[in-house]
Length: 130
Image (cartoon, rainbow, N blue to C red):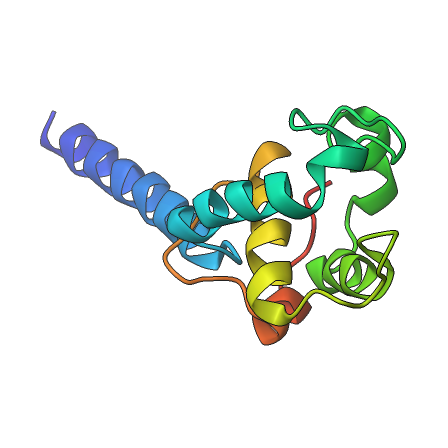
C-alpha cells in the first residue's frame, strides 16, 4: 500500500511538473495578449473582424489558419504581420504593437499564456502548435 502511495505521488509531481514546464515555455503573457486585444481592434479588426473570422482579410482563427501555421516558428507569423500589415500601411507597426497583436492571435488559437511577454527572440524559439 505504501508503494502505491509513493508511486501515485511521483506520477502526480511528474504530471504537474510537465504542465508547469509547458506554461513556462509559452511565448507570451496573459497581460500582453489582453493588450493585444485592444491593439488588434485598433489596427486589424476592420479587415479581419473583431472575432477574427475574416472579412476583407482572411480568418485568423479556425482550422485553415491553424493548418497554415502549424509547426512553424511563431517568428514566421510575427514577421509576416510586421512586414505585411496593416494592408494599407505595411510595415508601419512597431514591435510594441506587433508583439501584443501576435500574442492575442496565438491566444485566440488556443495557445495558453506563460509568464514572459512575446519578443522577437521569444518568437524565434517558439512554434505554433500542430
